[in-house]
Length: 271
Length: 268
Image (spheres, each protein chain N blue to C red):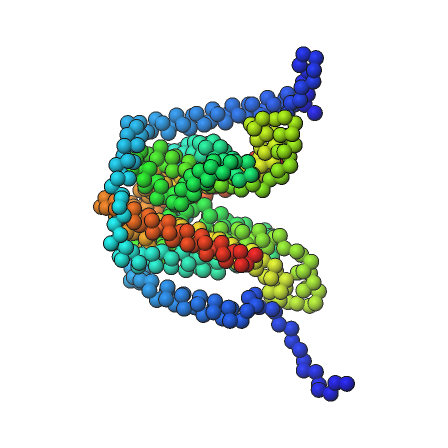
């Protein structure tokens, strides 16, 4: 118990004295790092631009209302493309993530020394590169369009799905697997009847969760040329058509809210 | 007495969805949708075909990646990304703590609750990139715009999770502290904070990791950091430098993941 004597009475303290000093030292180091980083950013900032930001914001807000409702007819196709990019991309990722997760899970991998590190590396590389960067890469390689968007979403989502799935596989109840093995099931049967039913709810939940995220991500892929609603958004911003920008933003919010609602419903139905 | 010979019975796996009509409706719906989606996707296959040698060059560029040609730009970009990550995580979390406490139903009064929830919903409704475009417009090019973007994204993420964690906590502990005569702040500090702290530290490290990854993206729209360097490398078709940048990003993310596991172990 951390107790200090003050004027003859015992006073309760949260930490022992030495631990308290360590905590203070940690805070001090943290503060120094923060101030250093802030200083570096501030050196690269033109503060007069920052100072007139409120005026700029007010100006922009005035120019954005009212939204240009008439141009909504031209946006049906981009929204459809956006939804397709997210959905097909998710399907692709989910299909590909299954074997990778199988190889990455400690209890199902064919080889802990050889296969598992490779699978883990695939997962980390896929996860650490944002969908927009994948899109940037794919647009330079296979050209602009919806296909680049689908592949970008797919490649980014493999890591996410595989990571969550392999963690689910590692957490299964080993006894059920053993029971199937004891009945004389082959390796494929053990997987199909011992492992798959246990991870199925997690798997479905992960897929829907990722789909929801992907709808959000696919709205911006057009900024680098990978199709979807981002293309008209980028065009509207570069031509300074602010009333159209505000319409597209409203449309994006609506799409995101609907997809969130669907994913919440589906997850509720699964669990 | 049964006469009929028992037909050999086979066990069948129970279907995942019990209602047959729903099962078939879902299957048919999925097939129709996928057919429509794939059918309406326009793919310029000749362009894809032309791009394949370029893709091959890109993958060849990884063996070995060229760290030296643009090493100055890469180091500058990475450092800028790290500064942005640090500052935006700290500011974002500092703002999130009052917001998160205000957005927890069990300790905030209704007007405060709805006000904080509204801010939360607003900061979460847009993708980071869209925010970044606007902040670059407002604050000019450079890391400041990126830092503000990441801070806003952090607020949306962290205060929502903090509020949910506070709502899920064991309220009797806070009540016990209050019963001992503690004021509101003491109640938060000794009744609420110890309960949510371990998970929040973990989430803080996780957000640091996300912010670094996102900082690689805000540069594409002018928000500073390694993203700008990467975008330039791609636009110049300097695949060997781009490969080097990607490997650096992957390396730092892996290091961060390893370190965060270490720090989490040390904190507890």
